[in-house]
Structure formats: C-alpha cells, structure tokens
Length: 254
Image (cartoon, rainbow, N blue to C red; front, side, top):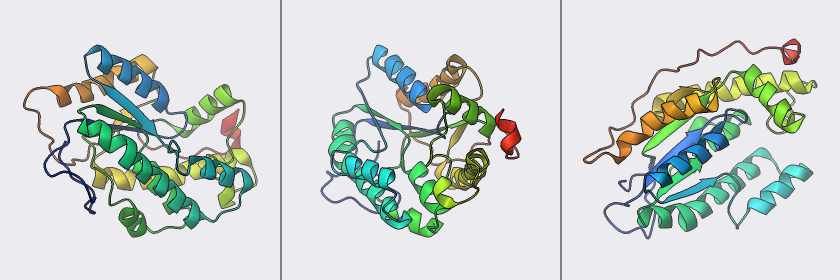
C-alpha cells in the first residue's frame, strides 16, 4: 500500500511504499466482526499470505488504563477519546507499520471509524475527530458489517446474557431504560457511520445473514486486492445494502 494518511505525515517512515495490505472490518458489537476477521484470516493464510490481526484496546501502552477508566467511570469523554487515540497510535507504530513493512496483511477488527463515531456522539465535533486521527493510514479496503439494531440486541443477549453499559450508551443519559438507551445509542452511531461512509469509502455488507454468507461476500471484496496489477481506486462510496431501520423501543427487545 502507498504511504497515504488522512492528512498528517508520520515522521520516521521510509519513503515509497509499504509492501503489505491493510484491511478493516468495521461494525457494531454483535455484527459478526470478530467471527469474520477469524474466517478471513484463516482463508488468507491458506492462500499463502502472512496475516497480523489487530483491534481496539490491544496496545501495551494504555489498554489497561482504558479498562480501569471504564470500570471506574472516572474520566471525561475528551480524555477517554485521547486515550483511545493513544492506544491506536501505539499499535500503529509498533504493530501495524512493522507488519506492513514486512509485507504482511493487517486485519483490523475495527479501526479509527468506531473511535471517531464514539467520540462524536459524546460531544466531539466531526472536524476534531478528523484531525485527531489524521495520522491514520488509508486502508486498502474498509468493510462495514451492517446489522439491524434488533439483531445486535439479540446477539448481545445470546452471547453475554446482558447488554454492556458502554455499548448501550448509558453514560450519555439517553434513557434510564437499558434497552431503550441501546437503541437510541445505536441510532446515533449509525448516523455517524453513514456520514463517514461518504467520506471514507465503506463497503457495506448485509450482516443479518449467516456467517458463511457474510464471509463469501467479504472474500469477493478482498480477493481482487491480491490480483496482479491491482491498484487502489480511491475512496468511492458504495450504497448501504441494509436500509436503516427505525430504532425500536423497549418492546422490541423481547
């Protein structure tokens, strides 16, 4: 991939190109991101490609501090956004850049887009979020797994037995009811992802289906990246494959 960022030139990088590829799988909790990253990684490795996976809160620098801050509810929204940016920056420098330099494929289970959306719904401006993550590399491909809120709800309940405080936006005081807050929060995030899709070139994939169906469509998007002579075609916007649904209220949780 070319050494293109969203605006800020990173110091210390060698001139020219990084030999690897950066593929991002985005989507809300319960959309099947982690499952898809695992399936995609296995498939790429079978094809002979070295793969390194990454995600949020995996740096050795501040990931534990973020977890402690979330548990104690001790930090404001801006401070949390800056901590997440530090976590991403540390992984970029110490994991993503070395992997791309070595010619590996980096699979990101979420990227700056989730971090931007979270910061914006908690009061940050879009321009502030853009500038905060202007040092991030432009990926070769951004796949967004698009699932309806009611599907996300049922998957979360089925997997964890309850809803997560933060993934339900309870810190925003949208509603005292956990389920209603969840739907309102997902609506706000969806609005930000829709905006970003126009500027950052998301490829929407219907994630309301079985994992194998989702994986087949994602593979069809990924495979051309490895064809001889492939060149990135900029950041086109592709239409949503799943029409945005009206957020359901508490009654829809049953």
